[in-house]
Image 1: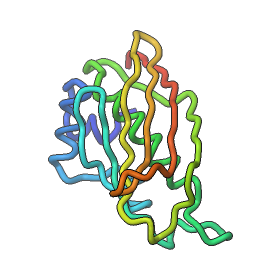
Image 2: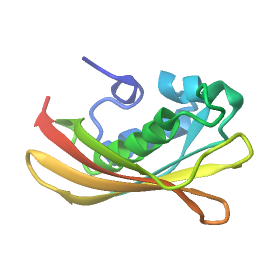
Image 3: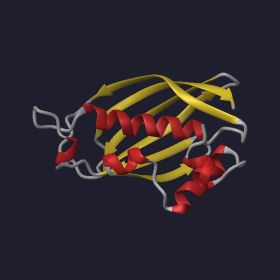
Image 4: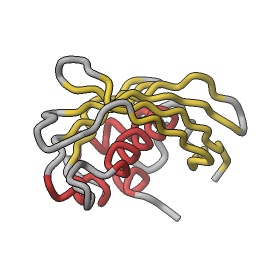
Length: 150
């Protein structure tokens, strides 16, 4: 199964693929659905940002936890993707999210910054933090990802 990164930049390593994807202006569907952007990538680092809207609200009147989880999962996953060879793929095995502060449409721009903690032939470990422009922590995550040859 080929994804958008392979379509935009076939045969490149993970970092080059993600940079080409960002430069192309094309967005994977999840970014459009939840209205957030891929804003930065370096080897072992990926950053996503978005302004939550009422579209992401749950029935109790705050942003659904899935919004934060999605940004954090994206940041962890793409941080790992940035360290892959052209023949490797990955998938999330586990994502543990801690919610520190309620999110609302008034929270402003939120940035999810993901970093690789370690990566091996079969597994990678990453962490991410979701903060506002003032550096207030809204959610954090740790992730275990399967690395495989494709």
